[in-house]
Amino acid sequence: MINYFELKAWYNENEDKINDAIVKNIYKTDEGIIIEIYKQGVENKFLYLIPGKIVFLYNVKEREETDNFILKLRKDFNGKRINIKLDNEDKIIIIENNEKKINVELFPNGLIVITDNNNNKILYANKYKDFGVRKIYKNEEYKKPPKNLFIYDNFDEFCNKIRNSNKKDIVKTLSIDFSLGGKYSEYILYKLNIDKNKKPREI
Image (cartoon, rainbow, N blue to C red; front, side):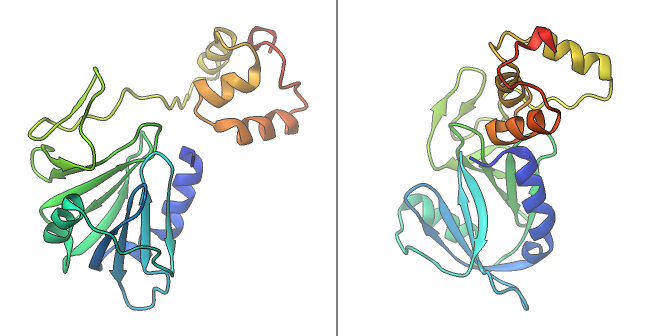
């Protein structure tokens, strides 16, 4: 699963390749969708959007399956110009035309949710679900899950967050409480010469 910092880097690298591209077609994969785009000079023309996992551009289309969800997407997006945005607070990629948005959630249990541009009302989704704190149903207002990415300007606040963590070791604190993921958490601790099994309150 991609973390926020990897997603931000991908977005910065690919934003210009996707913005103002025309949607040629949309296909289904086992876990998500593929948007075939056309833009002069762009070779990787298949945008893979896999909710809960990853987003990437590729030059090969793997499947051509359809279902009712894909047919609705084709009706709303085929032949139209799109732009891509990254939610600055969460792992959500937004593909939009002048009327509608595709919200692709890249966190666990993420979905693909289509909303209107004006009221952020849910028009349809790849799955419908009641998460308690938010409902993914037609005509509901689209709400993101509670924010779980913490970025601190105050160093003391950052240190207190670590010391007060209920995780059993510092690597889990960075990985879960700060949404860095295991790979980056271990790398940071290695570079700082800190034992990853150390208790947070000992840091």
